[in-house]
Length: 261
Image (cartoon, rainbow, N blue to C red; front, side, top):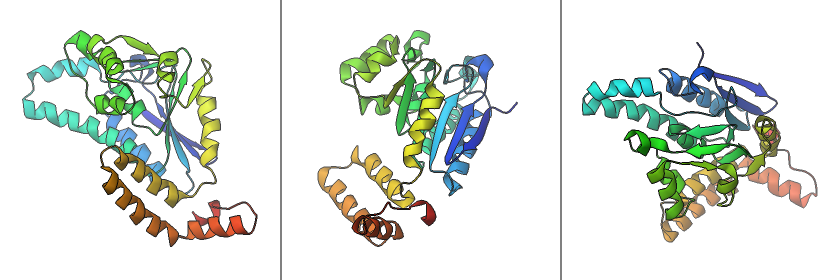
């Protein structure tokens, strides 16, 4: 069975999680296939953005409990090795050089929340939810989800999600500025595709540098971040993209960044 599928629509690569029977849980093979699909999108110069969504009206249920059950008999080192695979997937999304969009229909649970939050943009259905129910089965969150959520949520909301493990609906999440587009049920994929058009004629190198700046901004102090901004600005000023961008502005025409890819 192919767990991850991908196809292009114009300049957008759509990656679908395709394990509907277990609500797109992270069964064996999931991480390798997803990382490969993301790498394809990164390496394809005709791709301007990447959408990740789940088949079967659910985004991702996180780790497969049948596989998690087997890990109780593993050594600590072997358990850690399995988590390294998950962390690599989250890192591949967070560090992707192209803009990434999570299209969440139905909901995301466990490491599925990590998957969605690792993306640059979040589009959710108005009936969808996030659930960190680790505590209800005696586990603790993984996949960087506490860090990803702490970058946005106040402590009290993070505590509610992680210590109680209750579902938090998209309407409530939107109040904290987490969601870029709140969609009607059944229209998340279509709205994500419409959103992805924003990137079709934006400069690739500029976006890559901005993504790096945004990621480092959460851990750098002010002066470290200002120094990094200066470094990347100097690079940008000598880039063919800025030549096209500045010239088009001065010539009162629309910039054509597609021709530079």
